[in-house]
Length: 69
Image 1 (tube, helix red, strand yellow):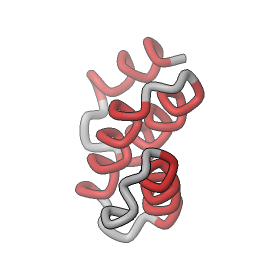
Image 2 (image 1 turned 180 degrees about the horizontal axis):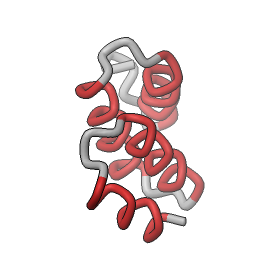
Image 3 (image 1 turned 30 degrees about the vertical axis):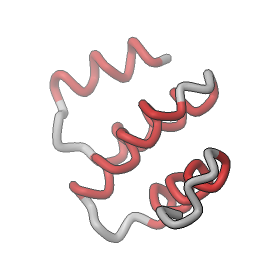
Image 4 (image 1 turned 120 degrees about the vertical axis):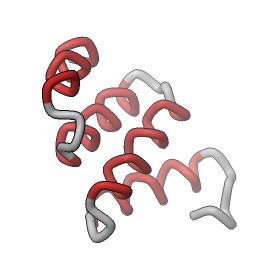
């Protein structure tokens, strides 16, 4: 799943939905920092993206980064 999304992102670097999906894929395999980076990148492309904000905040809380959440 992660490899497929990376291949798609080579073509569609500015697609926030793909970055969000990659973040979810990283979250499933417990690669928290990579997931956070993907959610942050999705938000940089689409600042009002509720799902990315939600998952980013949830990960910050899981990692104990309450101020960032």
